[in-house]
Image (tube, rainbow, N blue to C red; front, side, top):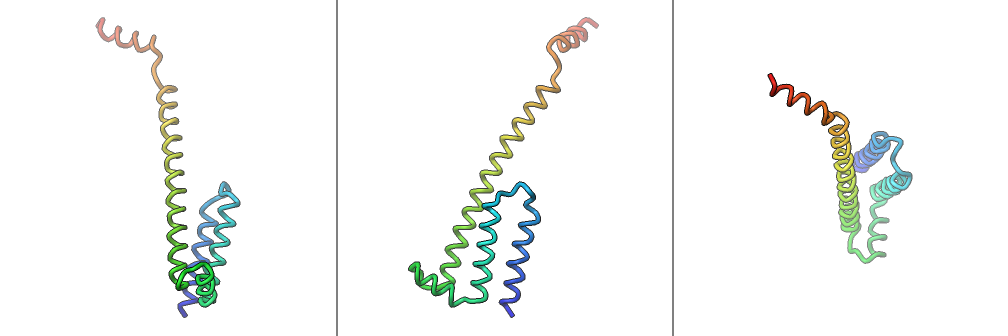
Length: 120
C-alpha cells in the first residue's frame, strides 16, 4: 500500500515540475528529472535493488544511499535557486535604474520648475 502512495507522490511531483517550469526549462534539467523519477520508482518497487546498488558504492543500506542522494539533490537545487535569485535581483536592479532614468525630468525642465517656483 505504501508503495502505491509513494509512486503516486513521485509521479505527481514530477508531472507538476514539468507543467510549472514552462518552455524555457533546459533539456538537461528535464532529463535529470526523468532519471530521478525512474530511480525513485525503482527504489519504491525494488528496495533490494537499491540496497544492492548501495553495497556496490560502499554504503551499508539502501536507505542511507537514498538519504545521501537526496541531500546532494537538495543542495544542488538550493545552489540553482540561489543563482536564479541573484540573476533576478540583477535584472530587477537594472530595470529599476532604467525606468528611473527614462522617467527622470530633463535638467532644463527641472531648473525652470525650481527657479519658476522661487520667483513667485
